[in-house]
Image (cartoon, rainbow, N blue to C red; front, side, top):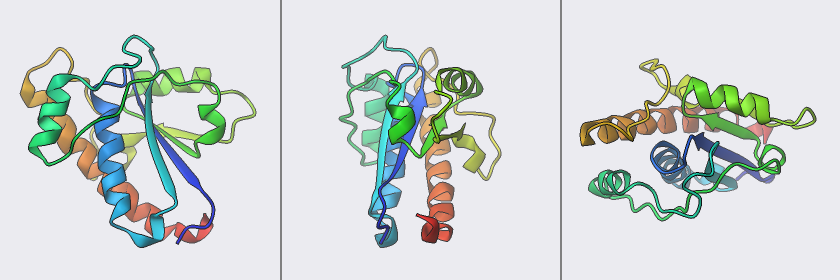
Amino acid sequence: MIEKRYSILCVCLGNICRSPVAEALLQKQIEQVELLKGIIVDSAGTSGLHAGELPDPRTRKNALQHGIELTHRSRQIIEQDFFTADLILAMDSQNLKELRKLKPVDSTARIQLFTDYDPRKSDGVPDPYYQSEKAFEEVFKICERCSVELVKELISQQNIY
């Protein structure tokens, strides 16, 4: 069991499509591994446009079809997140750039693309907001693959926490 708290923050633009799915899937994977019970997972957006809202209805519908209920309320990333999160996962390169600009110089949070963990080497999690429902399923699949691989890495490195 991890003795030190370890925190992961999933980030997309509005925190209503991609990052809530990534958060839920990562949390689900972590809960299945006794050694990783001390890990905290959250999500946020680089924009506060949807602050306080539930995830997009299409996102919730898609997740529910996979047995996952999304109840997270959207929020914008704040400076404190860079000090409480150990790992910040951007859903795409644009959010990665924005996070790197926002990161305080003295923050030790590691920032990287979530899809760095995708065995299929996808180039970011595409924003499904202006797309069909098929795009929401693709987001789910990418986030699921990345979550599985990230948890494998956390297990292999659990002694450093």
